[in-house]
Image (cartoon, rainbow over all chains, first blue to last red; front, side, top):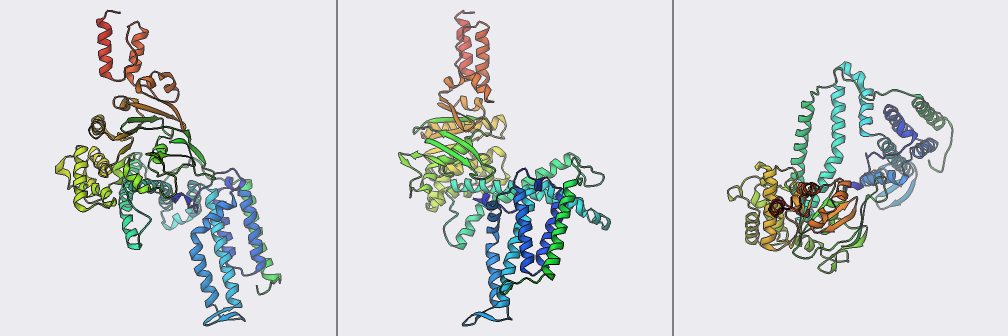
Length: 274
Length: 281
């Protein structure tokens, strides 16, 4: 039941994207996300689609898997699109009934917004699908290291993140187990109105909290007993080193960015109202 | 249960077949043990018994009815087949033990008095001391917590009780107490009991029948005596026969005329005394 959530999961496969340095993936994903929000042309989105398609193909993660992750944002997506569609003013009226107007501008912003959101989720899930949680935190730690100079405890933050990430599957498993145990004792989680259902969550949430605290306590004890004390002078078992393929990936992304800016801005290309 | 197959996470990269064509029948009133190495499919198997997991293929009959038929009352089944999970104390949540034990019967839609009567009965059955009834379940010792949790399932008056490693993480005394209590329960109420474990020693003493699981398949299914006679095969799948079996085989190899199919320490002692006494040295 809970296992169906794919967003933020790691998908094990052997591909050139999986092998990339996590720092490259983080930076390129960020650049891709920025590229989605600073442009406003059909051609630009066309290039973005192409870039995303190539990356997905290269990552060997089935498209089905990535699309599944979109389920989580369907409501948000519909809400945003409706807002844009009905509340944006300006341009010609396309449809008009009672107090609702759908204008050219409205349709345009709504479509662009939808595409942006979908690509945003797809782009970032490609990153999490192809990078192990550990790789991700290593990458973030290494990218944020300059902040150490401003007394930001980068290592500690990264450690907290990796622990949090590590606990997600554990807690999901635990929830699954507790749910089953309570269902076996006759708990009814599916029927009833909102209040009854909320009440039915109590027998699951309390044991879950108790177990989360127990696990946190165990982990703290285990870290303490191994004399863990933060980032000072700690070395890595697998230090991050840039290789040839990482530079290729950077170059490809920069070329993509340039293409989006130059072509999207200066090449006049219009489809209907877009 | 017939030809049960179960595949985890079908259609993803994590696909794994946990059960392969398992068929077995457990008659009413039997005390059966399921044994197997970690990951052999024991826990998956027993979660099918009350319909928590649905088999990818195959059929499961309870009282002659297929539980996968449309409209089969699964909640009814779950109150008849009580399932005690591994570390059942992790399911406790109420403010005191007594209220927690009432949770099951309350879900069955019984009146408050009936719930309390059943809770009292269940707590007595597992030998839970009365002075702790109003304690918070989180303040109890491990063994007591486990008793309380088992009582929580018993309070529903199931006809079949399935226990998944009820002794995991307990000290030897707590382990013996719980197993003793379960055996007592079986003798007293005549309910069907299925005990899951990975320790032969735990199981040998109590059960009438042992089902050995290996890599999702049923490997052996027989009386403890006959199962232990396959002790070499058991070793190959990472299990071991009880120590007395080894000892008796050793003795026989060294020329003592003992019978090797004993299952408990007491039986072994009697057998050795008999063999030595009859002068077959």
